[in-house]
Image 1 (cartoon, rainbow, N blue to C red):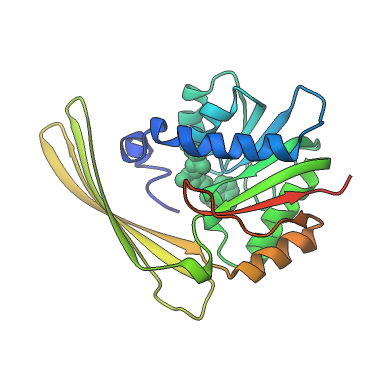
Image 2: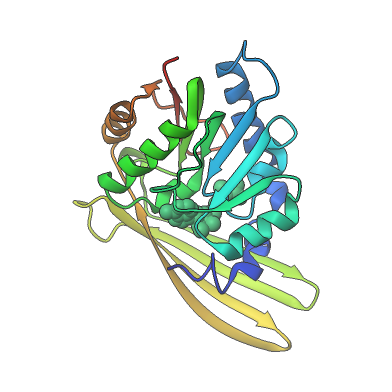
Amino acid sequence: MTLLYNELSGWYRMLTPVEEYAEEAEVYRGTFEAALAGSAAPRTLLELGCGAGHNAFYLKAAFRCTLTDLSPDMLALSRALNPECEHAEGDMRALRLGRTFDAVFVHDAVTYMLTEDDLRAAAATAFVHTRPGGVAIFQADVVKETFEEDTEYISGADGDRAMRCTMWSWDPDPDDTTCCTEFGFLLRENGEVRAVLDRHVEGLFPEAAWERVLAEAGFVVTPRQQPPTGGEMFVCRRPG
Ligand SMILES: C[S@@+](CC[C@H](N)C(=O)[O-])C[C@H]1O[C@@H](n2cnc3c(N)ncnc32)[C@H](O)[C@@H]1O
């Protein structure tokens, strides 16, 4: 269980403000709209692992959004930002809402799928919730071929609270399907500073594994795309 999506969720928007998502959300909107061209409006979207709802904040102008996440604390942040959207708690490996959507969006939360079995389960969830002829986007941070050790430094402030955070991504075992991001936080609040370490173990799969797992779920998968806003995107159509 990561601290960032639970005990530290009150610091989440300082780490990654919603305004920083406008450009990439526009890429996903455009990709869905191009792939869904010809569909009758209104168009519905399900997000698996919506977090604080930052992409959804922009996508909801184009889609009626249903937003799901494992963490009640993150869902509370998203509900505050996106009160007009439906929210539901659920694990992307097991969620079953019993209905389908025009679009299914699986953004960086998919990074918490650590094994091919996890990824297979998430792909099955996306498939059963995509209507025939509908489209799912899987947006991974990295694939095995593009992973590089990396360090990012983020600072922020909000009233009398302030944060300094170092994010250090590395791969302890290049032979398995995981890597790590170490979050080192210094959090200042009420005149006191505390240090918190939060390790995120993340999935790391070769492109061929992504394509195989998504195809085995039943999707027709277009070749991996690298949007200008970053990451690795797999656009998947459920045959209709
Ligand atoms: C970085 S946040 C997602 C941010 C989101 N993409 C956005 O646009 O704001 C990652 C989220 O993945 C969620 N998560 C991790 N494992 C999950 C799982 N198995 N099922 C659903 N959500 C999961 C965490 O609770 C966290 O809220």
